[in-house]
Image 1: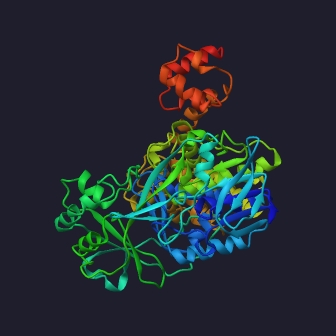
Image 2: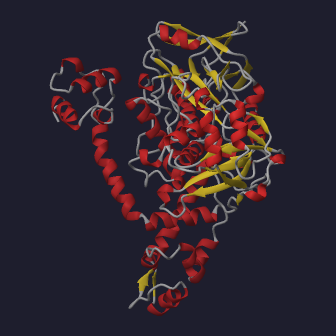
Length: 624
């Protein structure tokens, strides 16, 4: 049996789903291959989306016309906007989701996407001819031909699960691993390695004493993930619960270290630095007598809870005994223990910024196969890979995003230039232009680009134009409107702010840290009447205007820096030099530049091991 498609996507996780929907919505005849149609969009670890910097990525996926934000809003059990005590560059949305509903919504989305088929099977090899990927062969003996293939295999390539000294072959608990593709690509010259991740126990909520824990509620305001969804959250909102480990917990965990695959040599790969197992925590932070844990609901009506902060691969009895020393969990029953999993990944320096591989044309990688960790990082890569797989079918120029345009651009640029030596996780600190990459304005940065591609549809584009118009009207009003001294001081006394000595513009009042735009709207009739005309997304638009006014100086300064550095991005050097022969460059620079073969001087400057002095030499050779 042989079938033909434009784009084939292997794997229906967070990267694969976004890639398949993007390619199909752009018009490519697309096939999504998955081992289990009942696990489409499975949240393998924490049933939550977003968080620090990750939430910004989801907003960007949505702004580009992706699905993760919409699916998350429809399945949210709790929403929070993190870091609100800091500046807006640090604000990060996060949502706890109903795991089962998340899968249902993703499958519903995929099954109702035009040009998109699903096939339940396991991909075992690629069809590669003359250096170009031409399709996929499966375990059931089916051959699918395609013009482009996107691999999003997650943790399934040669996956190996660890629970103490027990080892189980699998891509997730109770799910088989995938074999063949790593070995084939290694023969094609690809460099591959092993990484590790893990997950905690799942707890039966009926056995938990919540009275011994601290309740943590979410927020119920206008903030959401999708720019398209204005409806109230459909699911009942639920709290999370905070508790702590203690010295008794740590003593039991230490007894299990000789049987820990992380410490007895059983696991040789590297795990995520910023999401360590509980056994790693008690060794690394031996002076701490407690660690914070979050008990998080997995469904609206079920009893399964996720114990955030208690990831472990220790033997089952050690996990359970330690669990029973934690306040509220003394009688806890578990659905399954925590486990670690090792899997194959491919060195991402083997990719172009489009996520197309350098060694095989029309073959794209997205997600954990590139050495990243996290649903959001995977989804962002999936969007980019799906878009570019479609463009590859048409022979069009690939679509890329720069570091000052998006967190997705930062992520891909870091992967391609620096590679990874541990699972890559996004942080706001990785973005040098984070005041330009706020979660509130992802639509302003990316929706028009997506609309020009044909991915974002007209209804989304029209909403962008309306928002921009309304936002700018508010900004113009506060900048141009002067209020008399008496009126200004009447307002200032109400908000406990120092009075003025003469008439002043509204913008000067708004620039005071203690004054909010809503304060002005409530007090000044002209501004109130202007904003009262807004019928859609009023609060979102008011917030956007306030941020741009208050942070105008910071935004302009960062834009100026970005524009200066863009000069280096315009100096193209790909295939221009034989780096090994340029002895004025450092040895490390020669090796790294030859390996990556950067497109531009700007990209070369971000490669680890390439010093400013090396860039100066390249500029001289370019006649600059």
